[in-house]
Amino acid sequence: MPRATGVIINPDLPDMTEQEQQSQQHPDRDRLTGHDYDGIEEYDNPLPGWWVWLFTLTIIFAIPYVMWYHLGAGPSIQDNLDAEVEAYGAQLLAIYGDLQPDAPTILDLRSDQAAMAGMAGLFKGKCAQCHVADGSGDVGPNLTDDYWINVRDVTDIATVLTQGVVAKGMPAWDRQLTQTQIVLLSAYVAQLRDNPVAGGKAPQGEFVEPWPQTTIEIVVDEEEPESGTDERLP
Image 1 (cartoon, rainbow, N blue to C red):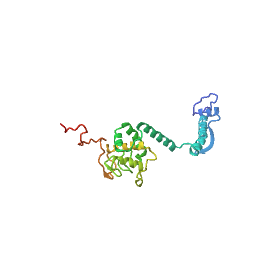
Image 2: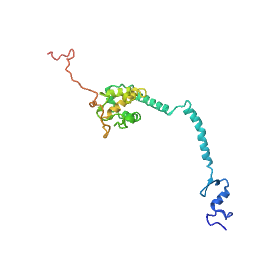
Image 3: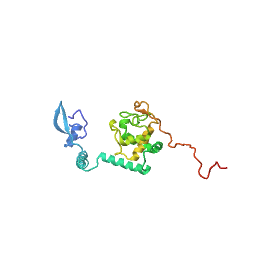
Image 4: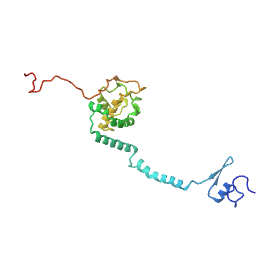
């Protein structure tokens, strides 16, 4: 008499449920492992062949990968990063030339939107850990207010970036960044104070007058007329 449970899918095996019929037709599948826990038996279903081969290939691939990149002469992640930074420095040098860390250059670059956009990424990668991405300060001082610890003039920013402040944990970046990058980054830091961040770190250091808005100062002097143009002659 057929069993009351299950669905008969093969009329030649009327006394078996659907699961039992499938097991009968595929003897290599649904083998019991012999594990029995609280009346629950465990099937030994093999993994698909494609999955087993894929897993095997990853193991085979991992052996030369580890030998080359971790134990051999293969480039590390840091090596790749250094190469990218060097290439970026070369690109900036090609665009801007060999920039000098003087006040006119730094002040003028503040209005270069393309340069400042690029330096925003560099600032986040190199400086945000201490100064936060928006410059509002954390471990390092707030760069968006008018108070500075080691800066009195805009050119001091480039000096601090180049030499660092070892006693305060500020590293020197002259070995990792080119002078052109340092000048551009100085301009980026200089323009941060134009947009103070509410709720930033409390001011530290001394008050510094705002940077000049223009690099050109017009000075009117009374000069002697050039020779041959003496207006005092009748």
